[in-house]
Amino acid sequence: MKTIKYYIIAPIHGLIDELLRQPVVLFTGFLLIFNFGIYTIILFLLSVIFAIILELIVAYRHDRNSIIECIQYFEKFKGCKFKEIPINEIIEKYDNIPEVTQILRPREKIAKLGYGFYVNYDEPVTGARPSTFTSFPSRYLDSFIVFPENPLVLNSLQKFSFFHELGHLSYGHMRAKTIFTQAIVKAVILLLLISIYLKSYPYIIAFAFIGVFNWLYNCWALDMFFDKIKVGERIANGFAISRLYDKPDFEQIENSFKKDKKNESYWNESFDFFKSWSKDPIDVENSKIIKGIFSKSFISNHLSNKIINFSSAIEPYFTPKVIPQFVLLMSIVISAYFSVNVMLPDLLTIAIILIPFPILYFFRVLIYSRLMKIKLADLLNKQDDNSPKIQ
Image (cartoon, rainbow, N blue to C red):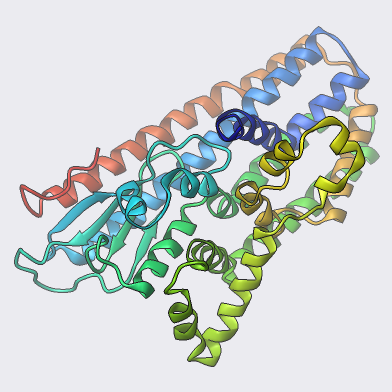
């Protein structure tokens, strides 16, 4: 059952969920319902392709920026020679790899997360050296975690720091960091489509603009909230707590945080977040309808399992509130209902905008991301012939 959930149900659920978050797909979907035809079908398929390309662009832009930050970080420690170790090997030392990776990336099949780096103190060290745990998360390229000490001999507090940095590598955390970038592109394309297909309804176009910008402003507010309120740190702490709360040295970790009043408040917020996603959100097992269709084991493994809940628990931090979503949805439905029939000239215009340009830009981002990865490898490799060789 777990194999089916991890590698079939979760990825399909993730794909459908992502498509339903695309206003362009929603608009063309309702357009297909109200004005069914061959051109509308093609337009809907084009919007789905565009949505997939956009997700890839945003993800690789995030990965590129993460690698650039990593390069800037390592340039501060040119006097150090680093050793490299797979992150999966570190997880294996302290935890269960399949469970950890599926909590971090419940919608994706992840073979390896990336690499850890720590200073090789057997070689001469000059200048500054890393003193804290630091992560550089990537969704499709390798992620990196820098350790101040050998990651295979961590004490209790250092293990907490390691799992904290792992929390930053989660799907939900990375997605939250890209919310506003996606929102802008989605808004521009949606308004373009609405403007084309509502040629004789300027007042409805105005309503659609209100709906889109209401949603756009809310995404901007959530993006600012995520950065300013340190939600990302709370999420990472919650993940670390989840991996260590039933371990013998957890009390020592908790006490170390509670020694300081500021840290105690921060700890309590993180612990409350952990409790909110580690328990079942809905008592689905006692539902008569559910019991009549599925077995209890199916429910516990697929609908109320905390491995899936960690991803869904992060949603409130970067999902637009109900009112902005409702206004956007209503503007999309009304705009689609009053839209004119999809004609070939308009379809060709939209096809050129939705497909070739995003594909070209995607390859540009992809190539630049690879170049940055090569630059990072060169930076590390120049330090010593036996230094890390990033794949």
